[in-house]
Length: 237
Image (cartoon, rainbow, N blue to C red; front, side):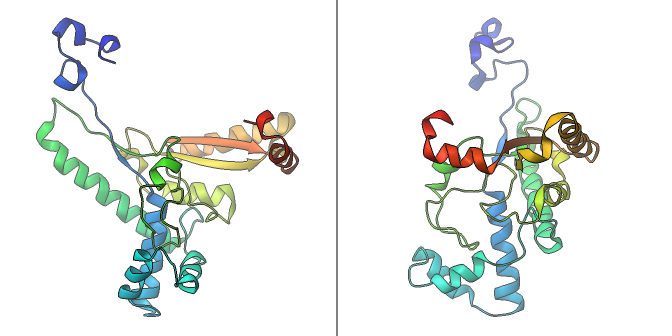
């Protein structure tokens, strides 16, 4: 990395010793949707409705939900989830991300300008390996399960379509995420076929950018293709 980074060779110092002209180390928030959904459920069920105590939640998490399946299903089915344009969940997400950015900036200030620490929300392709290190969470997730990818919904939590997911995402100040905050969307290929479909996809991307979006990725697929992939996975890697 140092060999192809500007000024390291001339300065005879690598990137970890301030050899580069500009030194950046991004600070990454992970499992953000899991955290948002967990806090939304706790806010209402524990503190507002008082339907369950925090002690019961902690015992269930410590047991990885064994013996607490009804409680887990109640939390998993809780309706206020990130990526559904839901006011309750999205307000928590906005507050949580703002707090994260604020704390990063506070701790990074003493290093500026020698080292800059831009914020990000991201997991790249590590959602499985990261999840193996994360304990059970109050959104109903088991210990070791996959975490939410990038700044996207937790598995199965987005039930109101791609526009709602984008609206939830845009309610947080992703302009502060200079190191990236991707949202990943899974779309039905049938909605984007032919020239009209291409224009529809282009319009979706343009609207995302115009409203301040950071990074968006798409997976286009259809039911028939998914069934073929299940039968012959080696052909659909």
